[in-house]
Length: 423
Ligand code: UD1
Image 1 (cartoon, rainbow, N blue to C red):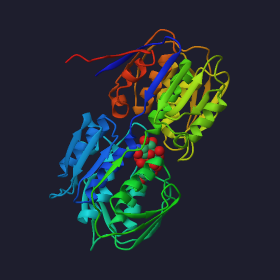
Image 2 (image 1 turned 90 degrees about the vertical axis):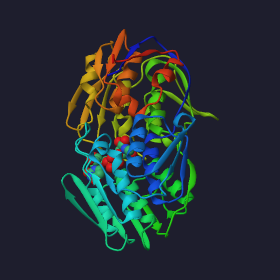
Image 3 (image 1 turned 135 degrees about the vertical axis):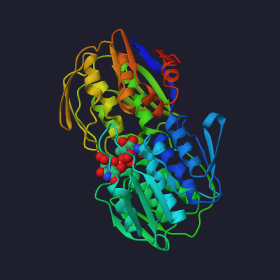
Image 4 (image 1 turned 120 degrees about the vertical axis):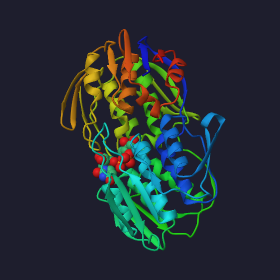
C-alpha cells in the first residue's frame, strides 16, 4: 500500500485547480440507466471511486468510454441491462446504492447488494427503502441483497423523509422521473450535488422543480433522452485546499471555487481570522501572520457546515489559539482522525459526538494512518503545518476522493511525495 511523505516547510503560495465533484459524478453516472440514449459528463474527476462506479455500470450492461484521461465520460444504456448489482463491487463503495432507483424505474425490478459496514458509522438503507416504497416499489431483504420490484411500474406519490438523506433524495428523484404522475419529496436534501443531478436530469427531458429547497416536485415522463452535462465543482475538495494557506500560512487561489458552495465553511474561516475573497476565477484564501482563532463547529446537512470537511477543519483548529468544540451530527464514529492527530501532538478529547480541541503552537511530524477518505487528507493538512516529517500510510482512501494531491500541493511549494509500495 502506498504512503505519502510530507515535510512541513512553512507558507504555501500558488494556484490550485478544483476538479468536478466526486459525489455529484457518482449520482450523475447512474442517471444513464434512465435512458436508452447516451449521457456524456464533462469535468469528471479522475478518482478510484469513479472507476468503481464505471465497473458497476459495466457489470449492469452499460457501455462506458472515457476521453481526455477520464475527464469526459460517455455512457450508453441502450442494450439489455442486468438488474443485479453484485456485493463484490457494492461493498467497495456505498454510493453504488444509487443504481437502485434508476434500475427500478427503467426495468421495473432490481437486485442490489446492501453496502455493508463502513468506517464512519452504520449507514443503513431504510430511508432509501421507504422513499422507493412510497413510489410503489416492493422491497425485500434476502441474502444480503435488496430485491425490489414494481407491479406495473412506479407511481407518483407524496413522501416525506424522516431525515434529509443525500443518497435517498437522489434515488427518489431519479426513480420518480419515469414514474406515472406527480411525485413530491418533502424534507429533501438540498446539497449542490442534488441541484447538479436535477439540472442534468432536466437536460435529459425530466420535469422537476424545487431542487435546492426542501420540497422537490417531479412530473413523470415516459422516456428520457441523451444529454451532455458538466459536473459541478467539488465543494469538499475546494474547502480542503482552502485550508492549505489557512493551516500553513501563505496565499492560495482555488480555481473554479464559488462561495455559495461553501458558505457555512467560509463563515467559520472568517471567524478563525482567515481572509477569504471571491475572484473572477475562483476563491482566494490567505493567512499572513499570527495564529488562527478557535471556533466551534457543528456539522449539518447543506447549507450547514459539511461533515465531509469536519476532519480537515479539526486539523486547522489543532493549532488555533484557544479551545474549539466540534460536534458531529451526521455520522456517528467520525472522529477516527483524532487519535492520529494526537500522535502529532494535538490535544483532543472525544466524548460521543463532540470533540474538544485545545490548540497547541505547533504540531510535530509522526507516522500516522489514514482511516477514511476525509481523515486521510486532514492528516496531510496537519503535516503541512507540522515540524519535521510525517508519513501517512494507507493512502488508498485518499485516492478515492482526491486527484493528483501531491501535484496540486507541490505546485504551491509543499514538500510532499508518494512512496510506492513494493510489488
Ligand atoms: C453523502 C455523501 C457523503 C456525505 C453524506 C452527508 C455521496 C456519494 N456521499 O452520503 O460524502 O458525507 O452525503 O453529507 O454523495 N441514513 C440512514 N438511513 C438511510 C440513509 C442514511 O439512517 O437510508 C443516515 C446515515 O447513516 C447518516 C445520515 O443518514 O448518518 C446521512 O446519510 P446520507 O445523507 O444518506 O449520506 P450519503 O448519501 O450516504
